[in-house]
Image (cartoon, rainbow, N blue to C red; front, side):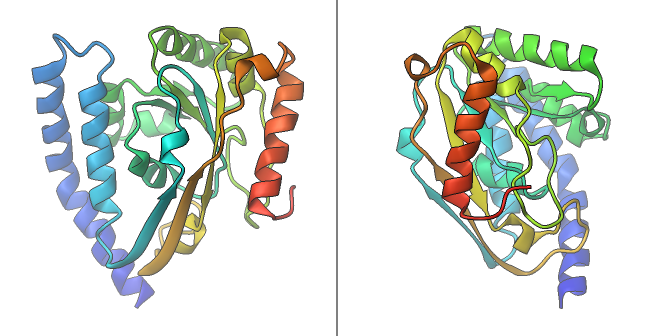
Length: 241
């Protein structure tokens, strides 16, 4: 059953992705003269992600704490479990620009959509790329747009929480904006890592935790990263790598 479902899902995804791209391109062309932050494009992307998460009647995505997301700029940090995480957090339907590995931006159609939405790329292990990513995130924050990062950078095979990289917390400390922890659970039950095998039944939970306000932390991004990681460890109740 899992193998049949996986084939049908990816076939549907590949067949509908061109329509997704054309829809988002149209939204971009219509709104770009007055929507400088590309909020309409991001909303369209979230809608398509939501539809893809509804392809299986056995998939459930539960969202809690959406009301805790602050208005205005903030740094949203999410634990990373699988490639489905970004589809899950899209159901927040909150304006943000998320940071993703540069290789995805080179994928036809998918990468074009990400560029149209103004998402931010980063090349792992490249200090210059990291600096460019932080600078681009800084520009979005100064325009009042939240940014979303996965501070682990990747995911572990056993679901353990990996060490947090400090880039997201450096941004928050320097720009004096809140850090918003968002806990995702259950995406490895939907798809393991980068796939391709998918299960027809899974329950995914997305929980927005109370923001950490800027006045509660100093400019010490390392201490902030440690503090926020502790919040995730407590919320997940699992081992840390």
